[in-house]
Amino acid sequence: MAVRGWVGSVAGAIGIAAGVSAAQLGLGYGLGIIAWLPATDRAGEAAWVASLAWAAWIGATSTVVGSVCAQRLFAERTPQSTLDGERMRPSAVVTVLSRLALATAAAVGALVTVALVAVPARGATRADTFSPQTIAAGYAVVGVVGGLLMAIWALASRAAAANVVATVAWLWLLAVVAVVDGALSGRGLTSAQLGVWQITTDSDRFWFRDYFYWPGAVLSLGSALLIGALAAWPAARRSENRVGGAISGGVGPLLVAAAYFLAAPRLAGIRAEQLSAHLMAPYAVIAGLAGSVLITAMIQRAQPSPRSADAAAPEHDEPAPSPSAEQSDNPLPTDQPAPVYTPAPVAERPRNRPARGTAAVSTAVRPVASSVQDAPKGKPRRAGRRPQ
Image (cartoon, rainbow, N blue to C red; front, side, top):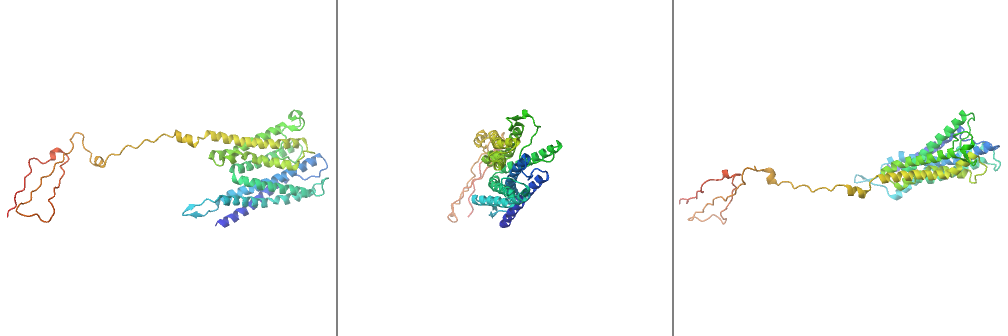
């Protein structure tokens, strides 16, 4: 049963990662978010850089999401061996190997991104290379490898996994809003930047030195801070893996920053809004870490420590001694005196007849009644001699 369960977990990780990759690329191609356009002008160059960032990020996030979903759906339901009716917890080595197996299987499934990126990228015309599909496929492979490392982290920390899933949902929502806003404003379906939405129209008052768009920076930093705090909150309340929960806020923004760095490491030949997003990506990682660290510290401070809980617990008084059996079974009325015990009269043995056997005459004592009134009155009658 265990072998069958792990085979199902590995197969599930491959299938889920491949499905997540295909779904993200299908949404990106359908809405024009990802577009492999010929680099004949600045718009084509911007679309090329943005598409490379999306390809690396989709490869990484598909690996992480596929491994996490497979762990939740299959690995945690796998029956474990039992000993004397009790469940045996797997060892640390088995746990690490299982996580590595799930992450590797998800990376294999996420390699679908390479094919789904390389084939459409053949339509892009680049002046610096003759094979744009090779470059696009290489970015997807690097993203899958980076996602493999992040998947191991996410499998060990629920807060990190929640941060990645929430970041993926938020960035796709932001990209859809940016595309819809461009269509409503008359610009048509244009490629959207990863995690960038130019909220306002072109105006000098929203730009700092013509390359820093502060509304977009506020949106990026604020979302990273909020997602980091919300993703770490359940783990902090359960007091499980607080160190992993405290640093989980940087997982999702770190994937975005890595994708931006791979797409344009020298920050040359990109547009102003792209430059602003590239510059703010490392600070978003810090903001996400700040959110998770703050919420973990606040909840830990609000919860009482074990020592203070033991000190605040009231001392238990010793139980009062229970009444004796005689007092509980035969309670005496308070208006009567205590019972008096007197010895019973002893019968004399006949002098002219020897005693039978060697046993002595018993001197049994019989108890008097529970009150003085029931005691025998007068002197006891002495037994006479037995006739010959």
